[in-house]
Length: 95
Image 1 (cartoon, rainbow, N blue to C red):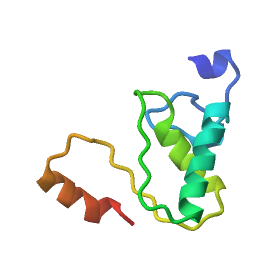
Image 2: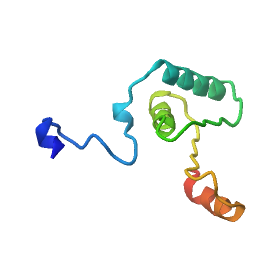
Image 3: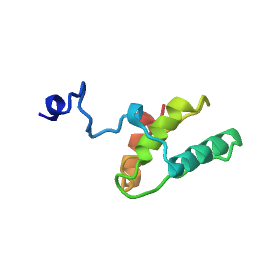
């Protein structure tokens, strides 16, 4: 309905964020800089936390595309996984 109304070529709202539509705010710039610094300086694990809908997944995906840094990124979508589910999740999703 809104595609025709607003003359859009594709649906603007999806469950998974699309980094093509990433708008870099000052806070996002800080997050991207922290990611790049931690990776280039080999600081080890990085933890990104925030409320639902604040752009954590979008920021990670945008960083992976725009950083130019070859690295391995794993995201854990459910922080309440028990140890057995977590152990099963890693081999399937850590590439």
